[in-house]
Length: 120
Image: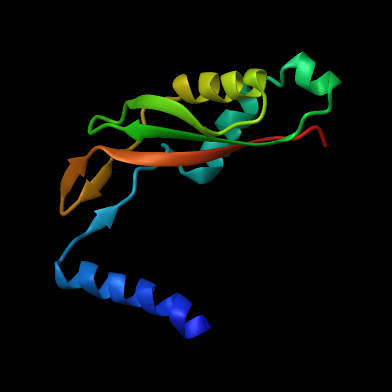
């Protein structure tokens, strides 16, 4: 079973390397810990959801443009209207990201983030 799961990944990597592709994913300035700090600082838990003890993950997808700006923000998997709106708000006011690079060229790439709402 493990061989079947690992084999496609291995083959895909061989194909990518054989085409001499150098891929760097888009990233938040300062890295993952800076992004988590930003989200924790700016996220406001809606009162309605606190009172109803609503917790969970909102998946948000967006594009990081060649210049690092964030566009086309949308909910992939949501919870409540108010939590979805809050996740969209926080992502929409993020600073510019470091754009992705493929073969030395900056390219528009899609990113999906999971924003966790937890009362604990």
